[in-house]
Structure formats: structure tokens, C-alpha cells
Image (cartoon, rainbow, N blue to C red):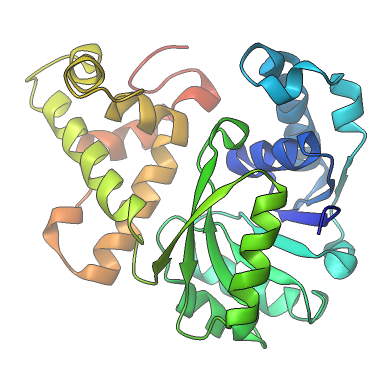
Length: 283
């Protein structure tokens, strides 16, 4: 398997990064968005990534941005996923929205396609229950920025078939990704741990214990992390972090997942991180 057609349903921050990475690996991509302005915003995001990627990615150095962009098509027509081998869902972390989408996708997605949920915290078994063929649904947690992260977390739901798992791992190999396979559960491994990390870092800012740069410096220079927890929250998006924590709190019913009020206030103020130019830091 060397040539795939990939659908990315939801071309936001992570969806656009994924589309770029798939095209960078010479795969054809269709990005499905809710409306034309969202398509234009996603395309602009990919164009921006393509312009600076050669500075950081060896694979991008030998390719012209226009050649990468030529492999991606943006559309609002969900039927366009029908001939895709690999369909990746990237819409916001809202159970009702995802339920409606999975029920709609069941009409169009090919019976032998892999339907991958790039969800932050919602269990894959639950998402699979919204689809008429739950054995086809698997979790694939791509990290941001996708083209600079060479490992993905793959989550196998209770109804995910062995065939879906094996085909998914094979497809990810085509995209240059190493996979770590884990069992299903709210937040899986990465977000169950990382969101607590970011949330508690936000509490240290709210409690005036330290400045954001000091918190991040401790984890970068003392623990060897490439990014600190607050830089990571800004990269992901403060709204996305808050939504994910809300889902974890609802599913676990554990107070340790309660959202730091500072982050909720930041969302209300529109300070969502890198994507808007202001979060814990100004960009």
C-alpha cells in the first residue's frame, strides 16, 4: 500500500496540519468543511504551513508548496469521502455534533475504508456506536503539528475489528508514522495525563505563583521537555483544552479534571492561543 486517498473531515487547526502532512507524503487529500469560509480558512492555514515547513522538515525541503497544495481539494460535500481509503474525523469535541456526523458519514463512507476518530477525549467505542459499522471505527490521535510528529496514539475500541486495526497501522506507515496502540478509555493515555498537566499549570498562574514563561522554563530546562505546559495549551488552543477537560470531567466524574477558572475566562475573552495571537503568551 503506497497510494491512498484520504479524507479529512474538519479542516481546523489539527485537520489542516494533517492534510498538509498527508499531501507532503504524496497522498491525495480531500478536506471536507462545513462552509466555504471554513474551506478558505483551512486552505490559508495549509498555505502558511507549506511556506515555512522547509525550514523544519527535511521531507518538505525538496518540494515546492504549490506541488503539495495541488494534492489537496477543499469541499463542503460530505459525499466526497465515498472513494477514500482513510477517513479522519477532526470536528470539535462535542458528542452531539460527532453523533450527527457519524450517522451522516455512514451513508457515504466505503465499507472497506478505515474511519479514524482524531478525538481528544471521547471514547472510541462511544463514537463507533454512532456509526452503522462500529468495527470500522478506530481512534488515531495525531499530535500537532502533524508533519513534525512522527508517532501517533492509536486507540482500539471494544468493537474495532482486527482488520481495521491492521489496515490503519499499514496506512499510518505510508504516512511515515510510528504507532503506539492502546486500549479505549476517556482521554486514552496522552490526554488523560497531558490535560491535567496543562490545567494544573494554569492554576499556578491563577494563584500568582509564577509567570507563564517561568513555568514553561522549569519543564523545558529542568525536565527536558521541548515545550512547556502553557506553550502546549496555546498551541492546542485554550478552548480545545477546556472542552476536553469538560469531557474528561463528565466521563470520569472526578474533580481533578475541573477546569481552571482562568482558562475558562480566557476562552470568554477570546484569548485562545496561537491561532488568534493571544493566549498565555502574545504571538
